[in-house]
Image 1 (cartoon, rainbow, N blue to C red):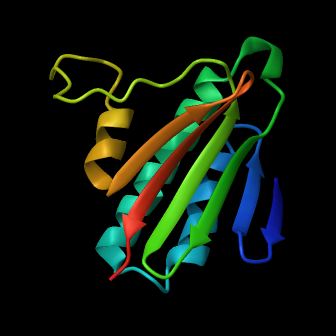
Image 2 (image 1 turned 135 degrees about the horizontal axis):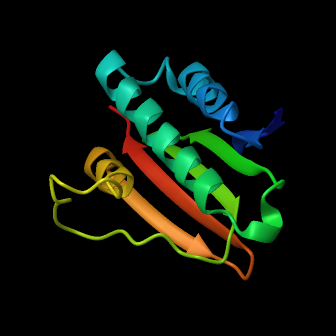
Amino acid sequence: MRTKRHPGEGATLAVRDSAGISMARRFVRRLAGTHLDSDRLSDVELVTSELVTNALEHRSDEAVDADVEVSVDVGDDVLDVSVVAPSADLPRLEAGTVPVTARRGRGLFIVTALCDNVAVSATAHRVRVSCQFNLG
């Protein structure tokens, strides 16, 4: 795991495997903790956990040893948590509900329910999911 700080751009954590999921939650808690109440901070940690888990699980086969990047940027009005993964597949953010009997597929529904805004973008080999949480 590597942490980098970019002046004016927040900080980034590199995660390579499932052991990094809890590190990503702690990373986000450390950077966002003074800006949110405990309930909202729990939401941010859950969203981070879901996004990192999905990124690790769905990264492309040829990039299985590549890092997933978690970045946090705290602005005046918005906290942005982004996860960038080596993948060519865009996650589907669908409206609606997950059937109670579904064994999978709840993660992105949870993410969209807890965030104030979710954006997905991609290049040929990387997918970024950015989640914004309003401050104040």
